[in-house]
Amino acid sequence: GETQPAPSATYGSEKVWVDYEIVIHQGTAIDSTGNHTPTLNGSPSLASMNWGGQGYDFQSIGQSITIPHATSLNIQKMYTISVWTDVPVNNPSIGQLLINKSLSNSDGFRLFKTNGTVARQRSPNLSPSNLDTAVTLNKVRESFVFDGVTRESFSGSTSNGSDTPTGSVTNNSDDVSIAGDSGSTQLEGVLGD
Image (cartoon, rainbow, N blue to C red; front, side, top):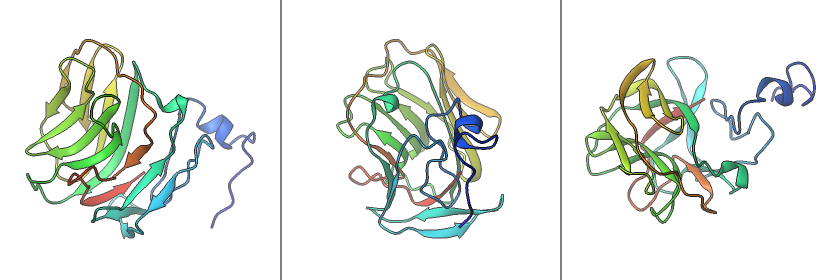
């Protein structure tokens, strides 16, 4: 593998990723910020991405990246989560779960590529709990933003929709699961970056 610069070097994690909590690049299960130790589960294969590099091809229950719970991952008011996705099939019987920190579905947050026929940001303690927007299939950069007032979903630089929920995201001690399953809501597609 490639050698990373020392954390305090000009291009080290302490300088480059100073405003980020966690950064996982295409085809790795390494946090470039050095803040967390992700674990790759279920041996997903690597697949080439049209935009270059490789991403993990998640196709079955048990394939995921898990980041152990840390207080710094408790998002209450503001977050931006961005990921390259390639989900070629809109299967309404399967919620294509991108990121989950809500095992009980009573707190935390969940981000779905598809949940039936919509994309969904879900935070059970916000009102309304869900922001449902149009689904963009195939290869696209998905971004989910909550600035404490407005919650918005993007495909590339195009906004798919927004709302202004009340309340705040409630903390929990759940691990963060990327492409993980929660019952039958596993991701069936490629994630990178």
